[in-house]
Length: 203
Image 1 (cartoon, one colour):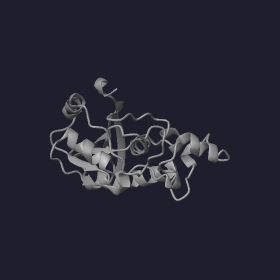
Image 2: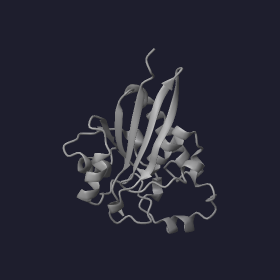
Image 3: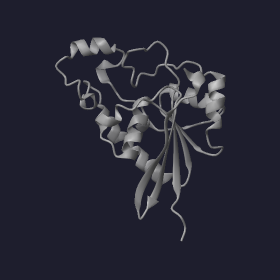
Image 4: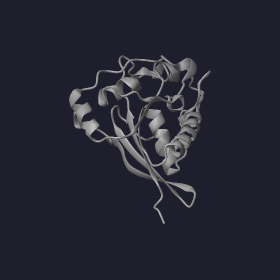
């Protein structure tokens, strides 16, 4: 009897963005900072030599992927894109909060900005994509360069967390998260290798 195949997900958050501190930049296509070559080298050594590479339509994920593996052409997966903050995109956190004091900020996972999506919406989107891609690339290693909210959602999906709990997970720029999935008796069984591993030079 053969052992169930294992699909490994290696998630990397893109490098820090330029000039967007304390703002909802979400799906705005803002550039990321150049990746420190020392950090890139250390991270690259943590990655499998053969893998399916994925990024999102936003250029900061592709730029980070290229810094880690020059010449790579990652598959573009729109469903792994960062949360859409709608009309809040580009606005400061304090400005949005001041203008929306009536919202329940104690449960931000359910707050849906006008013309955007909530983190709970994103979590459902990411879960569906992860399940679909895990089935399609069963038995392979996947390196996915994505966004903080996307990676929080993927961790939450693997651990069966509710969106409010998933949203509390810290995901730093250029951090690495390892998840794996085995199909046991027809059902996916997820494991977690590490969450938010940071290269010291990244700080």
